[in-house]
Length: 568
Image (cartoon, rainbow, N blue to C red):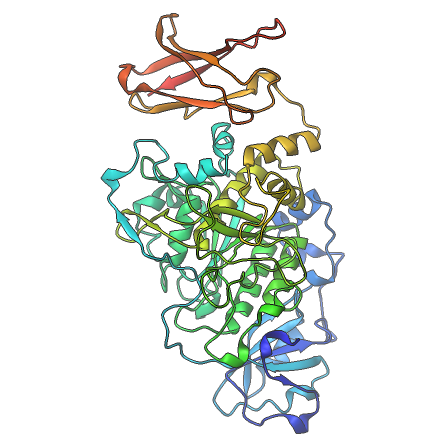
């Protein structure tokens, strides 16, 4: 099986065409070639940032030869030719992508260079189809802002609670300090939309130098709205309209996709962007992109290549994971077309490929199927991706379909989980997410391991990392503060050794006056939860007490609990 069926040029010059394609991929036999190669594994600070090295140190990951950059002498030797210039140089893949200076660029001499192992053509064609494969929302439905739920989270509540990640938010884990790299097609609208105002004003939006890999350095805030749509599911902090799954995280934006074409070259764009994100110290990567077939059919992937070891973008995704990043990608939207399966790089080893479900937790018809061709469960997990809310370009909330939404929704929740356990490795966080999923013991081709329970994953990480547990935090109360017309929600952590119900709850003033009370139904832990509608209580700004007490005490102990909340 050959990689993507591209034309492979052998090393004998006599077999080569004299006129090359616009791009060629040069695989190197020695990326350190040259007398002046100045990089050394003993001094990784020369090619990796302090944040990147700290991420490795925390996870006991050694810097190795994959981290070494491509020699400047190699780049100079290729750039100095009359035919070619270097477009990309990949340290992970030990390769260089060349761009022809004109249509007569000659490939025959490349094989004579001492550092060249193999040359592959990368044909391209102008696309005559609609923008491909980036999972644009299907059948978008416009939703007026006035129709959104009264809850502070607005349309973000359903995807958050489906993953049972709201207790993490309630405890203050909303992505603070976590860096998420977003590799996409373009981020039109982000500089202007109200949905991203908090992100802009808090300096948590980073555009690295050269981040628009696909378009030669132009602004990332053009070309496509897709990136802004998917970023909103994580990054929005738009009260009463849309709050994402990691509204306090820091985001680094990269454009690797050209929506006017469907080319193998775009996978190379992704590789160098992922390498840059790694070097800068990104913690998580989100990729709402997927590849299968191209404008030039000779470049097409085959379903049989979905083994995690054939496609270069899949190999690079696994390398990214080995550097200590949590790599999360969409499963692809080909479930209802002839391809049917996940797309590349969702087949990669040691990542999280995310399929889409609807609000009821059912497999979305378009979500790509597994398993991988080598028998691994794919997609690993599922998240909300059908009828999912996102910030529209016109300043309203819209809903759409696509695994493009499922991936960032889960990525944001994963950032919050990792924030809660900074001493955990990316692999430990990934495994906890998978193990918490509702089909973990009975995975399927359509659902993988199913929908994760992030609160359960949090508890497992607590136990496995031998952290001290504070009994006082056995309950969470949120949002806190809350508005006088809002909804106060409560939830058990899930580790209480008591009957699951019924429970008596009460809201009292600071002076002890009972303002509201009631009895819960019984739920199976860890989902003992409920809410109180405050709109009929006429509460003023101030401090109040919420208390819980089980009606049935089997052991004679007192499991009563109370917490303070603020109305503002």
